[in-house]
Figure 1: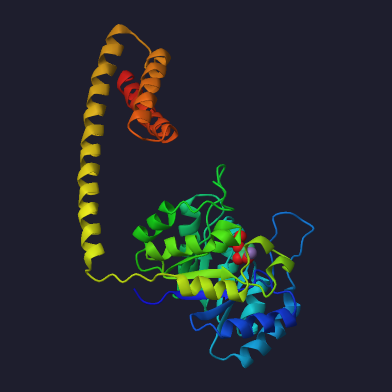
Figure 2: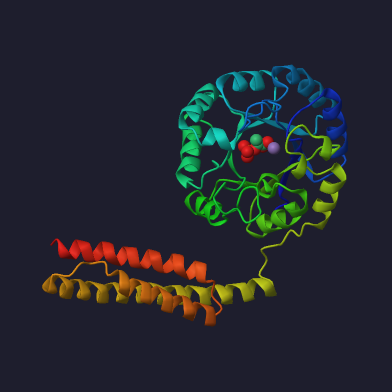
Amino acid sequence: MHSPLIIAGPCSLESQDQLSVTVDALSRLPQVSMIRLGIWKPRTMPGGFEGIGDEGLPWVKTIKQQHPDLKFCCEVANAHHVEQALLSGIDALWIGARTTGSPFAVQEVTEALRGSTIAVMVKNAPVPDLHLWVGAIERCRQVGLSNIAAIHRGFDIYNNLGYRNNPLWEIPMELHRLMPDLPLICDPSHICGRREWIARVAQTALDLHFDGLMIEVHPTPDDALTDARQQLSPKGLQSLLENLVIRTTDENRAEIELQQQRRTIDTIDNQLLSLLSERQKASLEIAKIKKEANMTVFQPRRWNELLADHLRQAETLGLDPAYIKELFEKIHSESVRRQEEELVK
Ligand code: PEP
Ligand code: MN
């Protein structure tokens, strides 16, 4: 694996002084190659700091001149932001989560980018709908952008398990399967919502072959006007970066063991699939009997007993009953659907 792309910087650009102190500190960390800044801030609730806005753009121009080795990126959410950011000479843009969730807004932003060669990163929408993410990336492609990356910032679901946004790693992994050449960047700051968890999530992202990290850094995090709980100090970022393990993909011992375990998983998955197919055949035979006997497809008593029995077994097998319940609800509802189809034949 190449060294990951490290993007770091404040959630929000607050003042020229804050910018120069942050960038000076980050320029001393050799791993950091790009600075992030929120110039226009989309806030879920009204009344909070909504970003310094256009006033901050000349500060960005100045700091860029002082640090020619660093690249700078900011969030854009409408055509005005795009025009202003392009005029200021910023190196890359990102489409924020709330914007990705709104196809009209993505359309406006991407139309404003038509003909530009700037790099654009697309965050996932807050809802766990992969299509919104893919759709925004497709809209970027449609206007001719070719330097595109995706940023995984977690998903706002009912049970966030203490995260600000649940990582639901299977979603970025599925995006990677669909678009294997698209670079994937992880934003552990917005996933965690608290600085103590960021290093662990950053490490998981690298272990899952993410190509980079975007991390929020503020010179005095507790005073930050936005996202104070999750911003790291420059020192905090330094220690995170020094402790990150960047694994090689060489054919080493761990890799061989991993391959073996993966083959075991593949075999088990094949068995699961053929068992599901057997189960479906049996269920369709039952449908024929029910049709003959003029019975309803759904038999609540049978379903309750079956589920209770499976949950008891799950406990003894060391399986999480909530997981088994969800799994069998899916299996059962598919069985009911197929039986109903059979009955109306
Ligand atoms: C941000 O990057 O500061 C931000 C607003 O993030 P998100 O769009 O992921 O909520
Ligand atoms: Mn933020």
